[in-house]
Length: 227
Ligand code: ADP
Ligand code: ADP
Image 1 (cartoon, rainbow, N blue to C red):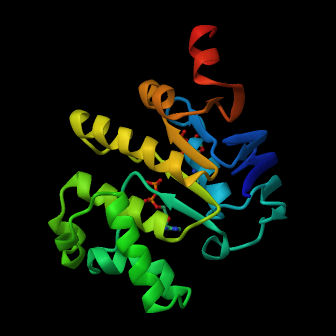
Image 2 (cartoon, rainbow, N blue to C red):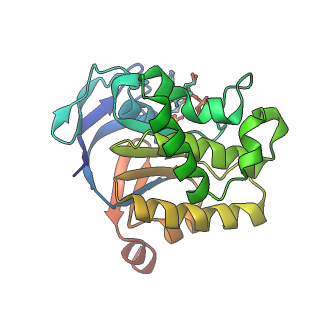
């Protein structure tokens, strides 16, 4: 069982820039929680706080009962997918997918097993494993970024606008894939977007964020039927 808790989370860069203002909520196993709001409302900052890429000014991030404030990103049982994919350009796809496992000294047998597993789940062509990210299409890069997150078998998934760089048709296809994929993971997922369609189709719950304040937190049905 995994659970992500945000407890009175606050981030101040300076007295005038407070992108996250005392946010509290829980995300349970199997929940797909989408933070939606306009550019600058604090979505990326929130993900970076959860990932440990930023330190909160106040409050706590708790994962499965453990406070992780102060725990560096690499030691958190979290995997993040970035809008820009953040693949290592000099590494092959296989090396990109397995990088975090090799750092953790996972056995090569186990790495092979997890890669086999993930290329089936994501319907990735095995021939792509030898390529460099620069030789992939946008959709393939995004699948590799998702594969890299899945092989870690983390307790919590974070996705930062993972569809924004895809063209409209591909976006719809990858969105449907992500929905299936994360349903079967049965882990807490935190997703960030400014796209209402993505929020409505993917989420079990939606958090409306405006100027760092949680405005509303409810199911897609409740949010878009009774706004
Ligand atoms: P979003 O992801 O919703 O577009 P961000 O979390 O990127 O919003 O930014 C929220 C606010 O925090 C913005 O006003 C932004 O300018 C500010 N901000 C983000 N990162 C920093 C930083 N490192 N230093 C100062 N201000 C920042
Ligand atoms: P965004 O597009 O959301 O602003 P970036 O792709 O710019 O995010 O990445 C933000 C930072 O996180 C970069 O400094 C990058 O080196 C680092 N980073 C990249 N991949 C990972 C990862 N898997 N886990 C933790 N940090 C990462």
